[in-house]
Image (tube, rainbow, N blue to C red; front, top):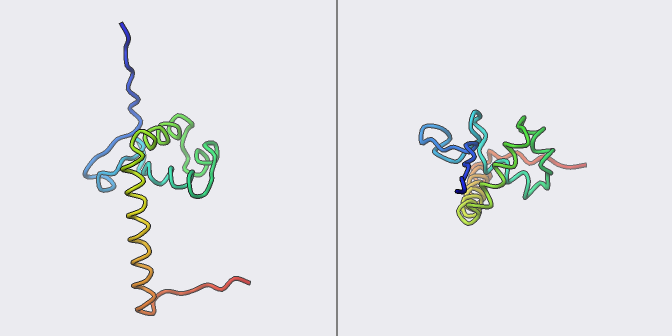
Length: 102
């Protein structure tokens, strides 16, 4: 008889980070690890160093993402749109400082 072994590395708690999936024992959101991997191109080893995680935690976060890709991609797009809205609002209020590059 086969046994399915769950990996208890990812958790959600409505009282922690708004109920978003996090890596158990940390306050690191799965979506932050995934965004660094997808948009910044960080390798799993780099994610482990940058987020102070072990490789099992990194791969659990990535596995969780791929198992819930549609929902997480929607969340990332929503977060990006909200960030852009807030930046536009700050700029309209004259509260956004643009740093020049030399």
